[in-house]
Image 1 (cartoon, rainbow, N blue to C red):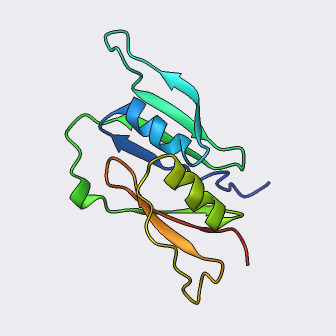
Image 2 (image 1 turned 180 degrees about the vertical axis):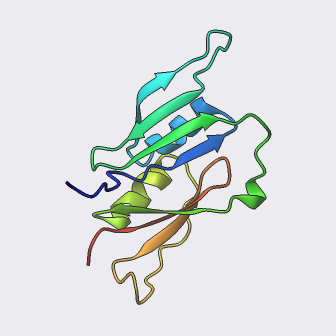
Length: 127
């Protein structure tokens, strides 16, 4: 008998506008691979997001207004080339923070906030 184990840990972000959030995350090479739409709605209400590198998360239409001052989670986004990812994000017109090199991230990291106030720390994968 095998011991049950979690196979994935997938966050679901409540967002004010699904189309806006999908467009934002496209700048990080994350794309909606599944969409669900309620029959009485014009826009989708749920999306499964994936990147070619294997990142996965869900977006869901919020039932109430989003208070971007109280998002209590910090997401780390790992990539192979932090400088190139920051350039990609800036080219997409997003406000990326300065590239810093703390001792625990010698290849750099930068901060990015999504339209709903979720904070993303973009950093390198591995050492």
